[in-house]
Length: 112
Length: 112
Image 1: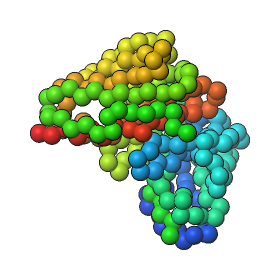
Image 2: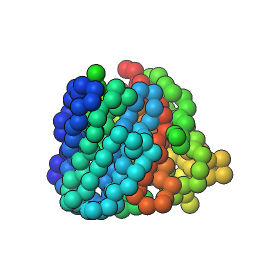
Image 3: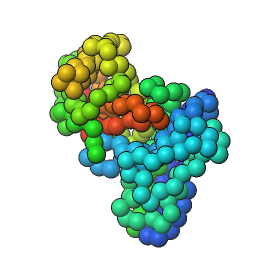
């Protein structure tokens, strides 16, 4: 099993560009989430999903969109990149509420 | 907003010594989890303790939880150089979505 796979691993964007960060899991988990990690801070929740077709906002959703058309995939879209979105992005999945989360290896995004 | 604050921010010890790191949180929780992050990598789940538990062990790890003080501690016994990493506590406050709120982390360095 690959677990949680994120692509790309690194990305540089210009301000105003859009892009999609991909996340896929092969564990048949219903719950998936996106977090961002900034220096000196823990992870902060951007968006999450409790199943295909169901998404909701986390702590820092502005500037990001998500969709969940399948159980396996949970892409994160940056609509118009800003330097403040320079961060490391992590996707996570879990089997159920209250269970351990499995994390991808992260996408390091730089917006110039 | 960050749920947890971790103490110390950084810890340097010799191989074979014990490492203790502490986490405080602000609101009621269903469970508290500890994760390890090696440099440049994703987070790996270490241990989960439920709100009705006071202590839990897993190998060289011992976790305590004091819900009256809203605090937890992680003890790593007989540390090894391979334990060098950042350690994060994360709380699950319930409310659906398996949303985790992370602390700011403790950077542990275990020297030979």
